[in-house]
Image 1 (cartoon, rainbow, N blue to C red):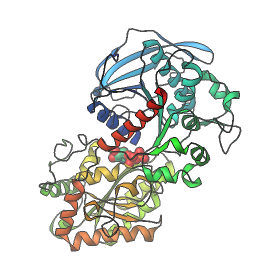
Image 2 (cartoon, rainbow, N blue to C red):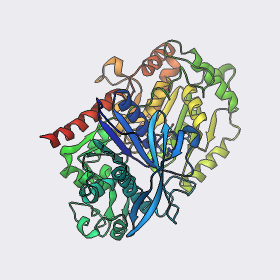
Image 3 (cartoon, rainbow, N blue to C red):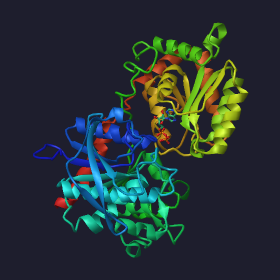
Image 4 (cartoon, rainbow, N blue to C red):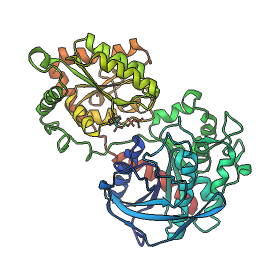
Length: 506
Ligand code: ADP
């Protein structure tokens, strides 16, 4: 066990359902690892607690071993045993909790979202994680939980674990997407030891719309000392009904402790100068390699690459195909690009069968087409090749808490065309918008979630690419040199931690 002795920094423990690259569903996994590594570089002790999923990428965990401890935790009024494992992920110490429970909570071949008992699985995990902190003698300064899956850590901490003596910490909570809230029949909360009667109040965990249900995400907001979300613009949007998805009132009441901090990206993982998953490494000093990557990918996917075709702009999109991402606009951008003489590659997959089917139909329509390719699966290596090869990247999201793909694109010199929402509005600044200083301009931004507005943004990008090649090269270099690291954002989190800790000491 790693015990904090005398140390210069803070002791921060994340309790999370995801951590890249071992257990990644979406942006949360990347955030946990990127932010933690940045804290660690700044001299803080950072640890994470995760479920021990059967389907993790075990090849990316170093020194995995079982701890010599018996962890008993309570659920449904009974005591269950857990194994605790420890290992190193990307240089960070991680504890994995393996429940020896007959329902095999984390032995399902998948992480979450499709399991009908997700509420039970994660309330069990949160209780066991706090029990681990108590029994192992860890006394962190900050316990940081994320999204609805670990939001229940906050009420559990104050109601059960502070009275038991686990009282060194202040609680931070980050919501990465307000669409998913963990809403259930109130009886479900009693399994982890909390009182449904105490918590079913409008100022505690009663759902704001379905008054007979309990809402885990709301518990994370109400009972944490500081609450953040993943961009300043999204933090404003969720105070309104459309963005807050029912929690706008709760966030309004707690607005003094609620902040938006823009995510960064892990600049070591996403670096075209060292990326082994791309054909030819390159940097802002010499972007010729980008063209080699484009040619190689065109050949690999059977797209036209010779003669006049060589000059065509390559537009790409890498995404989960879910309504949030503006699927009808993604579809429109394929046809619009074709009309304008460009090429298009889509890498994406959908958990919704009707959306998946719709895109399979489009893929079939363009099966041997020289300019269009749809790859409808999750493929990490291909995503790197696409970021490196493409000229333009479209992100027409209906809402976007932060978004990572626009930042990854920029890092690879691929110019984003985005809708002005959430974190996209905080990280992409239109080349034609005179309100921004020249050095900040890095892409194309459109306002409305309709085809006309998207075409306006995409057409300008395609026209500039074709008509002003030298200007475009400068734009590519500028985008590649933007500071997208975690450094500044990690400092903002640390400031908030210090603020809540200093309030305790006064
Ligand atoms: P979200 O978390 O809503 O899915 P983000 O933009 O925050 O969106 O993060 C998406 C991450 O998942 C990026 O790293 C992106 O490259 C990756 N990704 C999305 N779809 C795919 C796919 N089909 N294949 C490979 N990587 C993907």
